[in-house]
Image (cartoon, rainbow, N blue to C red; front, side, top):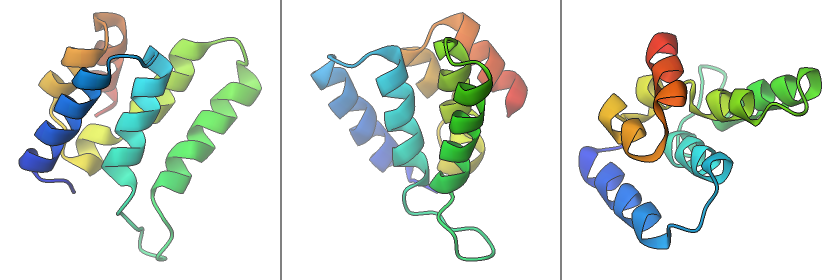
Length: 102
């Protein structure tokens, strides 16, 4: 899990770039939150996140909202992010779903 200091630095860098789409931001959050984590079988946890997103893409190819939620579904639980961090970048219809999933 990331430290608050690391998360604050990540958020500041993302704010400074400010060129990403909502989907790009969601993917960046997911990668940052999970890139150093492994599961009980020593598999990278980010693989789970990408599988969720791929499943959602295959079933609902035109629904970017679901892909965003797929990327974000574990960033609070696994990555140390707070809901307030998510609220800084994502509209209520997204962060409220993430709040429900956490």
